[in-house]
Image (tube, rainbow, N blue to C red; front, side):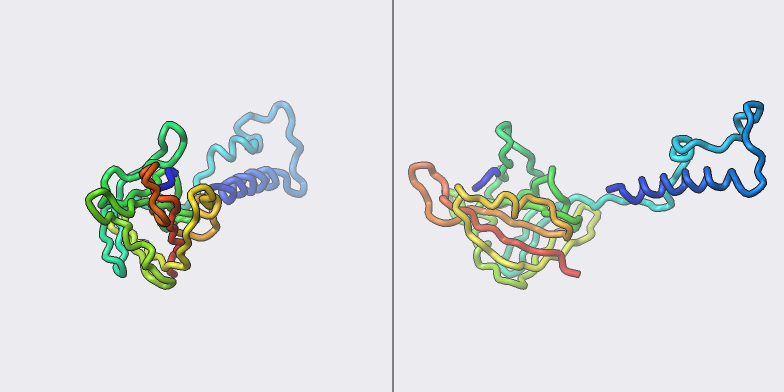
Length: 207
């Protein structure tokens, strides 16, 4: 198979700095002189920014640890995948375990979360053997380390020749939370020992 946040905070800092500066020069205010004590001078923008603390608490999305696809009987723990030395995506080391591309999006966050799994092995079917049986609307559930769940619905399933792998469609950032499941498919090439195509499931987060 192919191995392949914050503008609001910056704006808030600017607003705080401007508000502090504007509030120091009302009607009839005495102009600042060189004898004014430093502590009585208006705070500069940088100083105001340093003192800014957002009232919001940010809690990052927990990492995925398990994948469930009821329609095709998949219930697998998730192996964390990275990149090979040649920059291609690692593949799971266990035929019966799916993997999550950890440098990418976490399932449930805006963007494309990508998971990979083998279709078969020399001894029989592997974790994503029945992936091509999925249909539009089928449910996919991701369980996270904090026990929260992200539920996705299948939009479509496509097959692509490995020489024309849709990298942008699979890995390119999206504004909505999406999930891509990737495995091998098509004809098997005995010479290379690999399948000639990839089967890809495209799914979106259920609201």
